[in-house]
Image 1 (cartoon, rainbow, N blue to C red):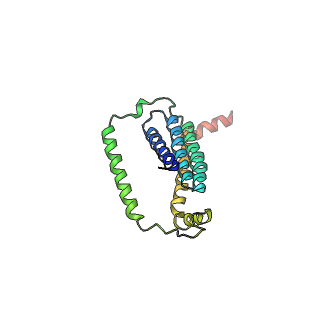
Image 2 (image 1 turned 90 degrees about the vertical axis):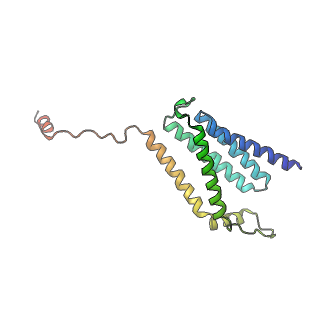
Image 3 (image 1 turned 60 degrees about the horizontal axis):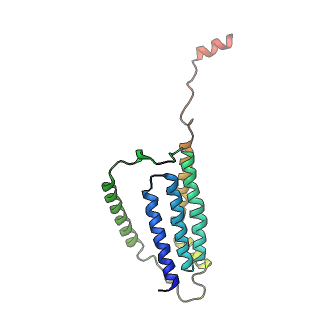
Length: 185
């Protein structure tokens, strides 16, 4: 094994273990910070694969924007910062079974749907560049990219709506006779 392969395996272990900690920790802020570690390790894997553009996009968009969005959502909704025992329903076995079934279904759908979505990069010197990657993203993957941006916008709007306490409270309409009597005084 070469040094690059060893570093790739170590970064993969860091990414996987921190991703497990994201979903198993009882503190929301710690979960967001473990997500930073996981996404950073994934960016390191991209660097080892000589995909510098994808690594920087990973750091700027996911580590920079998505995690900041999560932290703003936590702060704006006044979510509990410390350990939350209220969130544990005790159905871990059922949740694990549902999660495993959902993951299996997702993998099956993705493999079936994207079986022919791959294209040969060829042996041309221009392949693997930022231009060819941009062409591939905006030619073949523009719809998922836009769906993700709308989803993030909806999450931000939802966090703002949940943080406002005066939404939905409308002052009771005054009685017309009471307002007329005040006007006469």
